[in-house]
Structure formats: C-alpha cells, structure tokens
Amino acid sequence: MKRNVVRPKICMMLGLFLTVAVAGSSTATGGQHAYPGMAPLSQYLMSDRNAEIALARSAAPKAISGDATILVLGPHGYVTAVEGKNGFVCLVDRSWTAQFDFPEFWNPRLRGPMCLNPQAARSILPITFKRTELALAGKSRGQIMAGMKAAVAAKQLPPLEPGAMCYMMSKQGYLNDDAGHWMPHLMFYVSRGADWGADVPGSPVMRNPQFHDGAVAVQVLMIPAAKWSDGTPAPAM
Image (cartoon, rainbow, N blue to C red; front, side, top):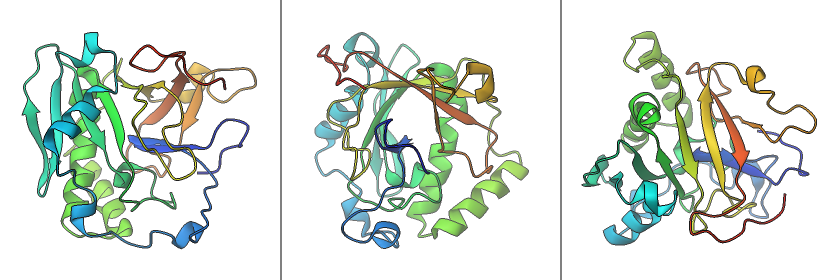
C-alpha cells in the first residue's frame, strides 16, 4: 500500500498482520523484488515454542493476554499451545496475511503479535487460517488471492461480526523492514471505514490496506495507543 510517510510507514500484519502496514516500502535489497517468493518454511517458524507463546502474549496487556488462548505456527498451520478462558486468542501473524501487493508479502522476518477479541477470533481468524493453509501448501501470491476469493464465493468463511477488533501493542513485533515494531495500536474490523472518519485530516483513525484487494469484504482501521502492552510510553506520532 502507499501511505504518506508523515504517518510512520506501517504495513501488515498483518497482519496481522500485520499486518498492519506500510507503505511505499522500497528496501536497499530491491524493493518490490526483495522477497519474490516464499522462503524455506523453517524461516517462518519459531523453534522456541515458549518464545512464540511469550511473543503472542505481548500483543495485549497481561490482564487480557494472560487468560487468552495462545496459538503457535507449526509446519501444517496454527495449533493451540495454551487453552484460554476469556475468549481472546493471541498469535504471531506472518507476512502472508498482508495485502497482496505488499513488497514484503514473503518476508520471513515479519512477526506480528496480535490478540483478537472473541468476535474477531470467530470471524477474522478463519481468514488467517485459510491464507496460512494456502501458503504452507506452496501456493503463489496469486494463487492465494484466487483461493481466498473462491473460499468467499463458496461461503467457507464466516461473515464479519460487529465489534471485531484486536490488540497489536507488542514492543517485540517486527511488522516490516522499514517500521520495525512501529507503535502500539488497536485494530477494528468494519464494513465501512468512512463511518469511522478514517484517514480524514486530523483523525487518529487510519485505514490499513490489508484487505483492500476485495477478496474479503472487510476494512481494517487502526488507532494508535499511548502505551505498549508492558505499560511503557509509546513513541510520539
């Protein structure tokens, strides 16, 4: 996506993320062609399971992530490492959940810790699972996009639930090569960003381009937070 550098370059995470995500990324290693395809799977996995659990929990304050279900990425997809009891689900997003035209779509270094509330766990997490399934099956970027559109057409993905949101407040994340961990923020999943005043002058609400390709009918909005999940102050915007 192309976002003005006045608002720090964010992209992803993907997504989460993580997205969450930024823009106009052109790295010294070749910009659009720096990551032309998927790296060996081992580069996307974290060998230390406990480290991945801790990184996932760092997405939200302990009062939320401490009782959340924790997922970790394995060779065949995400698996439950810790059963939670508050309905939240925390995981570390990988690069292939970003928008499809993101230059770092296959960057194996990306790590996007996120904690989704119950509504997002039910209606957004299946999108992550499907993309991950396709990526781990060796599909190309274009094939993943086609697979997502086919899944939507076949009604294999649940509709967006009102109130779906997630926390991305980790100081340990790596959202892209330009922004690093960027800054703590909340993400809201909505059908119409205009209803929130996203991206208008003076508004703290920013539109994340994660789903702008239209494969799924979801818009992602971001609102910066004043503190990281550990309570330390965030950098000034």
